[in-house]
Amino acid sequence: MSDCIFCKIVAGEIPSRKVYEDEDILAFHDINPVAPVHFLIIPKKHIPTLADAAPEDIPVLGKMMQMAGTLAKQAGCNDGFRTVINTGRVGCQEVYHLHIHILGGDKPLGMMLPR
Image 1 (cartoon, rainbow, N blue to C red):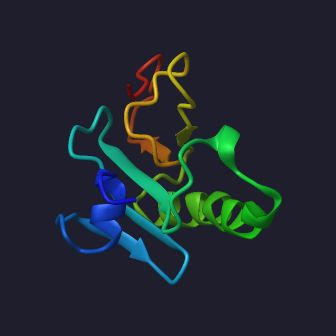
Image 2: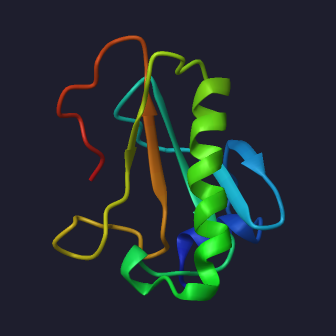
Image 3: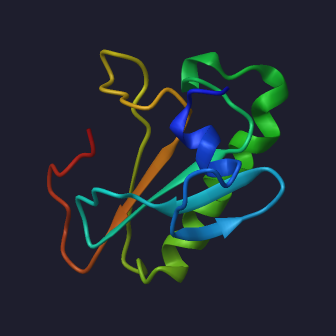
């Protein structure tokens, strides 16, 4: 999708601080972190929201969830982390390309949530 900032990051048109990349997904640091560890995991395929995911997206959704734990541990979140998926207007989604926020650090996160 030509006007999607995350699609532009996937295409290399906008730089990012990559955490992980393979043929299906990309993980990169959030530009406005709300926790000591804060990165996003996105599918390379443009899926606007979690509500728009189709049955054929199940493999990439599963990979995103599995890699959340792996990448959080690699980032030092050995005592836990938070995953957040904002969906749609009411869910406070700002970028309409499905993404998982991974939040962690050395202290409990309380109610810190990404917008």
